[in-house]
Image 1 (spheres, rainbow, N blue to C red):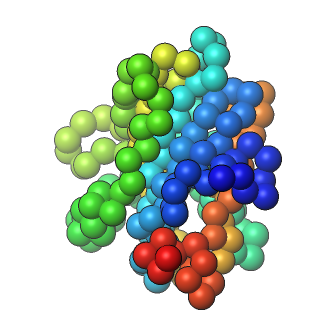
Image 2: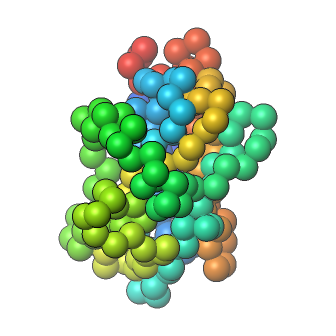
Length: 180
């Protein structure tokens, strides 16, 4: 179903697809919509390229515009690692609430590995996609005032374009897939 944003369509109650010149992305926000007040906003993301050319997505080029217009950068692995023990139960709940995001058959799956459990691997500062692979990742944004109702925009700055995927949380049930 089309949205009011060019290149963005609604695939499910809390799933959006972005189609752009460099990549396609599917964003799941079911957990965020159902957990207002949490101090970390957690999103599920799947990304693939649109051409045979590789596109590198850097951690520092991923951010979130929150209600009020402030831009919040994606957490670093260090921030995530410091808070992991405290937020681990929230992460487990988010995994249960996640929608399936694999909308591309025949593409090799990969993990973006921007975040890893402390002591269980190496996190990377970027990942690369093309039209033969799709990478999956949970995105973590620390929000000191907590996840609030309102309009959010996931932003990814790429070499040739900028991805912008708007979504709404709360607001009397609109944007909360559990209230539909």
